[in-house]
Image (tube, rainbow, N blue to C red; front, side, top):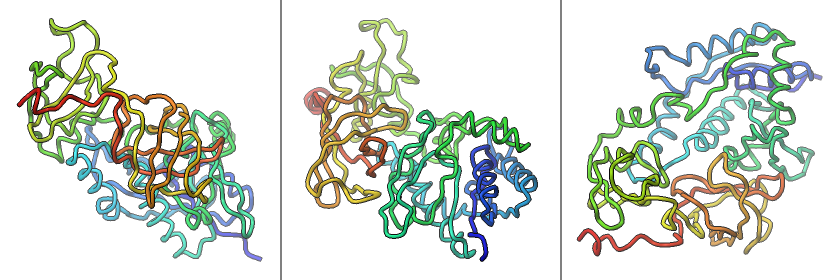
Length: 374
């Protein structure tokens, strides 16, 4: 009987390299595939995808497995990057890494893998799956290494996708992954982890965005209508932002830091407030659409925990389902919950699912713009 075939997404990093190593040791028929999703060179004129591909090929050669390259740049532009830009035009703050998983890695790439008659697609994500027996409902579980857990970015996946997926390193600590790579002599053993949005990397985010969305400068004002300076364009700022406002150190106010608390799209005003005031906090949010990896705990309402950004500790919440969407009420007011980002729900170690944040209920609504600035 032939060994099950697994297509491994070899990114050129240590995590996917060890995923391939483990599967090979477990007796799978392993085929490596390097995905190219972005064509542009970095600020030094270097195409980082080329260097990553070379690392993926070196790992495949060491493991004695074939490695091919597939180009998904068109799909990425159509399904992820165009959406990313549209959201910024709407003054929202999207999460392209979640969309990349739902639309590219576990849709376009998964379809490609199944076209090669693979039994599974494997990646180097830090996450675990349970219930892969026949007829069982799959549960998406946090990784053993909580500092590296990536279930937040996988919350948009569904049963039919995950049933064909393997996460070989989800039960390992990052230190264990690197040690396995060293012992196997893999070229990526000491390679630095990638950071930031996949197509931006470590470049200046604002400068990158300016290459695609034209700036529309305007005035920066506080809640009394006082003009404090100029902004470069509302889309370049996000709720709760403190750095890069261009007004720090000026001789006015209490000396506390300034934070973005709102935007007036009609008048092109960036609204800021000094100090951690109530305008930065909200009591609930709504998602027009929410998806679940398994069935929700209740068809009406339930309690669980949630994250509203990747590195945030779990927050206690009450969830009320509303047709295709939901309302999430917070146990404690939350700071800078931002439309466009994702609310991801957890029950203990299990990731239940999540959805894109469409609106929030502030602790203290901003004063009427017409009353202050009209």
